[in-house]
Length: 392
Image (tube, rainbow, N blue to C red; front, side):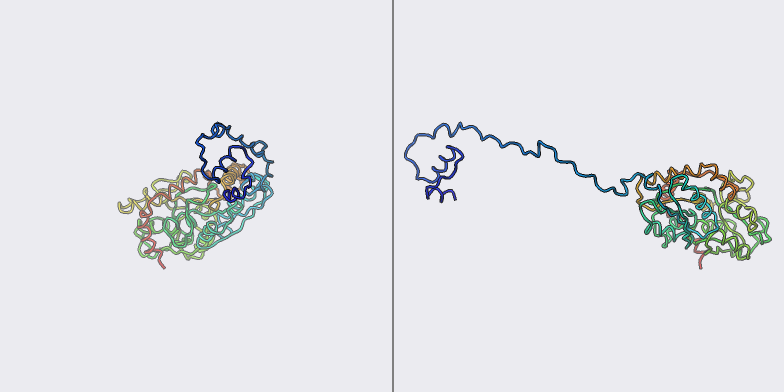
């Protein structure tokens, strides 16, 4: 375009003598003069740089703050005046249900919000655990209360296909009643000693689910005691259901936490615990002997006893995965405040006459992580026992 413009005699640029000379030289025939170009074309000053854009001098006007998102609201403000749901993994009337309802009654005074309790029974607690894992809200407004035995740790450790959750991914707020399992005979049965039980053919132990720790403990007890044709009857919905089954004569006994058994024995459904399925007595119930005090456990069964002693009975409070950490921290702090409330302790001890201190959320999370790190192959033998004694 520049050549065309020069041919027509049009001035190519008005930016200075230097540029005009260069353009003319490019368009005209080669000159015969050999005089070098004026020094001005060499020493001409560099063009003055353009002034800096004003945007680099004057700061832009501040943008309005974004609309607050749920995670930008403080945890205390989130829970204040908010309605929270606590899902209980069992039917009304049992220890987990009672604990959750007493806890909920102190929620408003502690946080300013409200808490309602909804029972979500099914599959020994698995229905609630699966719900919390896949369907519950991740904002911290839906919590869960369950038994670690039947509704959480046992099924996960035993690779129950119905357990559609990952144990370490829940956030744990705390737990109650960390106790080893114990064995008790139904009050309606005539058996009074370990020797009496070992003479029975077809002794029936009640449990919630096949892969729960309660059934696992029951199968191990049958193996250690060498009971003839004994079996584990599963499918009961909770502690209250097991007690009614004992009253009807459907089961001869059960393996459960010492706390649960003593509570039900006071109601007249079971006798005082006969033994603790552990190497030592409970610190809370020193009158209940450990199984190792009553008999010599065969060497091949000691690994079974080792495994089951890791799985303590306890009521666990948890949240779904992925709840914002500040809300988990707030919930844990609230749990600690409520369980330290004297009025709360009075009500809990009224129901659980034999009381063990709660475990806080940080310690409970560590316990679950440690359990998750145990090779599951160690529980393969227990799985075979369940197939043998609790198979349908």
